[in-house]
Image (tube, rainbow, N blue to C red; front, side, top):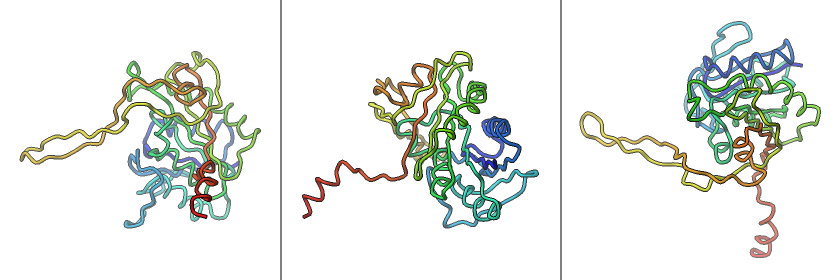
Length: 254
């Protein structure tokens, strides 16, 4: 089995090294194609106005000056054009990708692009919280449990047009309470905020940030699973059609 791995935190991110070890526990044939720099929050964007720069960091490890989707495209159409991968893994992201996160996430987008190109794909993310912090996630949680979960998902099968979003809770590996197959959750607080600041010449500039208020997780959601120290397994479809509205709109425009 040939596995292509990518991420959105960049070629030097610790989560990418974790994912390499996870992939190599499944096969010896692993190719890494990841962004040169941190691409968090770029979602499923493509670099259309700038050229892509590709460098081989070491054997079977490549850095791309571009987005995660760019990385997957270059891998599929150039680096691996003669030998397509059997599986694409994106991550391990530093921080969860649940609820609305999936629409912003470059990690999820790497798996989306793989799915669009017809390769079974999964996104992997390691949650962290106030006690662990951004610089000290429980990487061992993802590394310990991911190989088994990946095998189980592959045995069950990934439908065409579907990717699988795996999120690991903010706890030690032996504190995981189980695995939940979940829906994409929804937060009930304002997510995006704008932080206004002033530079040295008193000109305004702005940072986009994310409010992290109290959330009541929906039953069966990815948010609920992580809150209970359970691994979340969420199948996501690329078809964004709201099928429940089709009949109503069809009648309205008849």
